[in-house]
Length: 329
Image (tube, rainbow, N blue to C red; front, side, top):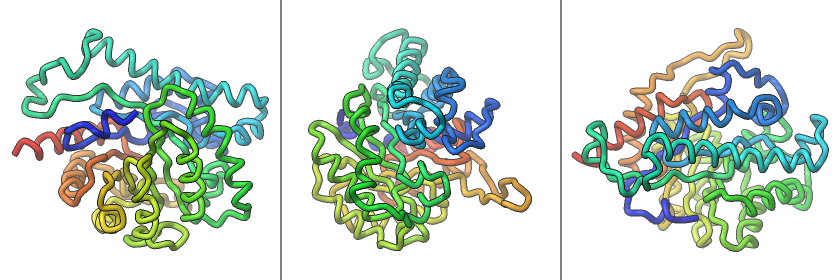
């Protein structure tokens, strides 16, 4: 499970916005299940999106389970058994995409045995890609934006009971690492850490949503969150996601202060803002600029870097190109 995170490579590239690329391919995600809806309606699109990110240079792809949960699927009309099968399907789709990528790009030869192409000459050889189990917060199930507030009106026991079924399925699957994403509160992070330390053999990264350059969404200082996670051997990295790119560098400083022995993971959104009145996104999503920013995050101490909402395979391609150029200077 840890081989990529324990390698000597200077950086690891995550994928970008899964839902963003689904919408580009014509999917309607205006639903409380969001991207998990496509597991029911058109799962082959998910496999295709995974493959697109692998072809763009991602070292790790995340399953389409951020907003997938047993209660969520049952609320949408599935049985409990069908809900569990859909979560397993998400892992199978990522596995299929990885297998197709390896077979087509390298003709079945281990990536570690392949020499760099002329386009990546000088870049460290790529390890076989990993699959991360995307574990979204309780707020994603609520579908009311509370993953950016953390103001849940449930007990710790109820919060744990929500996470446990999906956690159990993922722990028994072929995923390589858990990606605990967009965590808005210290309370939810503690519950997830308890689950992690009760599950032998599982490794995870913790990634928080943040309200500013110092605090996570519930107002807890990020350094305090990092400090809580710093002693767990099962935590491979601590970081932030779905925040504005302009906040990333100071947030990295707080992570490194609180958890100096951990890798730092960052995958911000594109930097755009949603105009609810005009019902459109405003701002820039230039992939080349995003790649340039990734170099700054790398220099600040992040070594696991990708994109979140509104980022695309082009963003991942530019991150990879920019970081490859940086490390061979």
